[in-house]
Amino acid sequence: MGRYLRHAGLLDWDQDKLAEACVLVAGVGGLGSASSLYLAAAGVGRLRLCDPDRVELPDLNRQVLYSMSSLGKPKVEEAARRLSALNPETAVEIFEERLTAENIDRLAAECDVIVDGLDNMEGRFVLNSYSVRRAVPYVFGAVHGWEGMAALIQSPQTGCLSCLLPRVPPPPEETIPVAGFLPGTIGVLQAAQALKRLMGVEGTPPGRLLIYDGRTMTFDLVAWEKNPDCSVCGSFSERTGRHRLMK
Ligand SMILES: [Zn+2]
Image: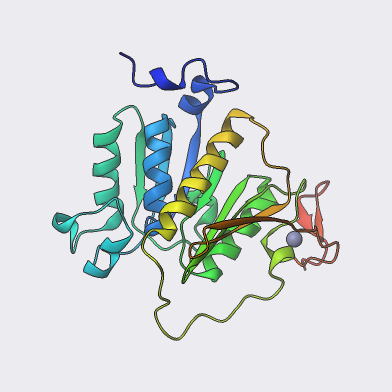
C-alpha cells in the first residue's frame, strides 16, 4: 500500500506538487511541531527548519515533536530525527539559529511557502517583510492564553502583517501562559493553508484572519483590509522591487 493512498482520488490534491515543494518552518516550538509533522506526513519534498533553542521540560505540554529523551538537545536536531522517522521521503534541512533580518534571505532561499512557528513578533515582522519583498506566501500563526489566530498572507493579493498590526507590540515581560492543545490546533491549520497553497487549491477567500477561542470552541473568520499607507506593503513597488520610502 502506498504512503499516500488516502490522498489518492482526493479532489484537487496534487501529490507531485508537494514532492517538488520546499517549505520554511521558522521556529519548531508548539506551532512548528504541529505544522511540520503534518507537512512531512503529507509528503512535502523539502522542509527547512530553523530554531536556536534546546528542548526544556516546560516545552513538552505542547511541542509534540519532542519527548523526554529530547531534553537538553537542540530542537532542530530532534525535530529532524522525528520527521525523518515519520517520512524518509521528506528531506529535512536544519539551521540552529535565530531568524533575523540578516539571515532570512539565506534561510528562506528557494522556499515556496513560509510557515510561522515563532514566539516573538520581531521575527514575525522579518518573515512578513521578506514575504512582501519576494512575493512568497507566508502563513502567520500565533497563540496566547486560550486563543489563537492564523492567516495566509500573500502580498500583493492580500494585505500584510503590518496592515493587520501597524505597531509592533512590545515583547511581554513574563512568560505568556498558553493552553497546550492550542498551538496544535493552529499549527495544523497553518499546515493545511500551506499545503493548499502549494497545490494551488483555492479555499479560503484571501485576506481573512481566523480567530479561534479554545474555551468556547468557536472559530471566527474576519476580513482584514490592505492598508494603502502600510509601511511594508503599501509602499512596495513591484516594478522596482524597492520600498518607495527606502533611502
Ligand atoms: Zn501591509
